[in-house]
Length: 463
Image 1 (cartoon, rainbow, N blue to C red):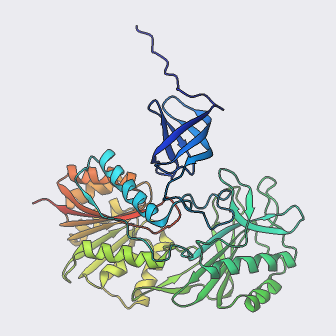
Image 2 (cartoon, one colour; image 1 turned 30 degrees about the vertical axis):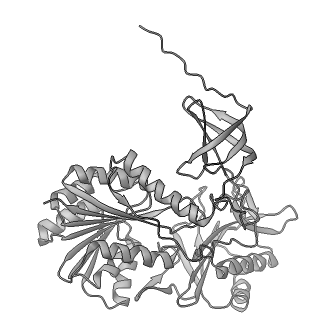
Image 3 (tube, rainbow, N blue to C red; image 1 turned 120 degrees about the vertical axis):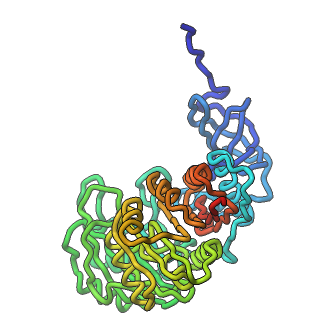
């Protein structure tokens, strides 16, 4: 038997080389090639030439560190965040916003072409924001202890669990920033101890705040390592006095050794269980653990495009798989005969039903369960046959059984909302093999300054 030949990388660890960046990875790193061998280097931009230190090599690719830029791209900009190069929250603040939008369009194009084999599908320019800052309506901030014993609040350093203390995050709405800082100072005042991951001791794990821009209501959530919250009455009193528009103060208990932020038990300490926000003319009740899009302005853009692709005239039956708290369902219900939403998380379905009542929408029904089980049952037991299918799955994409269910039911149109171009491309390929055609895809920038991109695909049945 012929011995397998070992492939050697043309570069070695700790070697410093000079190379030009040709492309970007899906997570925003520059791609430089040496004799065809790719090196992935954070903060590199295509068109730039740089000195690169090789950090790690593998058989087919390696990783490097940008040492010095020798030729600089016109697309490079100075990141306004003072901790950008330490914090792991944003990845592409060093790129101009126009370049970010083009990068996200190309990311979708590349995924459709390389993974889905869909080379002819039109991918429109990314719909961006007029002001791509201060957009996040929810802050989830871990709490730690500084060297002087006082509390610190910030995000984790890249590839670590070391908290970078911060006073502001400029992609978060200012009201959330101000509230996190106020809560940190109030908790510090009463000597509330931060949670220690290694020792599994201490009280305060995270501070989470949610701000509803259209109503001005704000929710503060303490994530605690146990039932007890010392000085609870004083904390509540100081928060009510120190934070304008606070409408809800909540405690969530998480005693597990886990990276998951929320635990299973939540209780209201003061005020309401919900705050309220509007997307367009639809009102949503948001609890501490509700899934609600973090960029409401761009959510309206995304859902308007989904509504356009659904092409509703008022007499259609629509199924919304992965319906969550009913955000897309209620948007569509204004223009459809009836919308059926299905979701596997019982709490989300309870929220969806509440939101339907809140908006006085009677042409929507929600069910708990796996879409691939509930939808065939709807069809068999009640004769429900959708004209339009809407899917908005998690990053892993649609369950294969759900794709098969859609192909069997043959709706005229499928509107696929995706947060992951790779799994979108994979699923569109399966739908195309089953008799559908992807007409167009619209990327929407829901998360400026990061590599994430949402998009909506218009898929129609070939007749």
